[in-house]
Figure 1: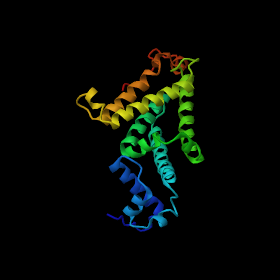
Figure 2: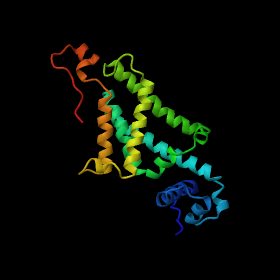
Figure 3: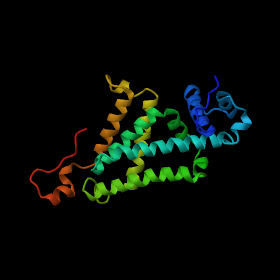
Figure 4: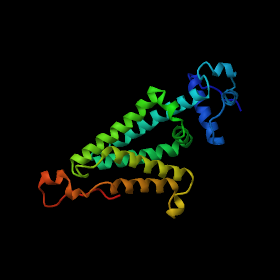
Length: 222
């Protein structure tokens, strides 16, 4: 059924929304002629804003990563400690993937050569990488990580675990390991637990040492 453009809606944004919906239904990136048919426009008209399927994948990834960055920024704004901030990023990633499962999958499967050919996509990715590294550096400074911890490898390890948990969640394969809760809640619990396991107890933090208090701060329970 053709999609009617809303007042003020640009053809590009309508095409991205239609492509996302079709991808959710079919499990694959749609061809331009399928998107054009869904929009009720000629394929040639659509090609004035989306040149080919690679370009469609790029613009879908662009919008999806913008949404991810926005979600992460909103979540960490309410956290003060580096431990809580990293947990918030992981949970935000899970929740974003639940809202945009087809984008999560398409971006994850995007050929590296195509991804790396677009500076905006690299900038989004680098923004998240830099943010996580800065938070890990702060956690190390506060004594939650050993001074010689390889933070770059720790970041890569954390991302690999997070991606794997979300992938299992998408397959509906987490809840069976955690009876009584949904796949999304199981994923949230798993990434929170993993995040807490990365760090030493708050007893050993430099914050506690500087405070010199008898009762030392501990990590907030999951």
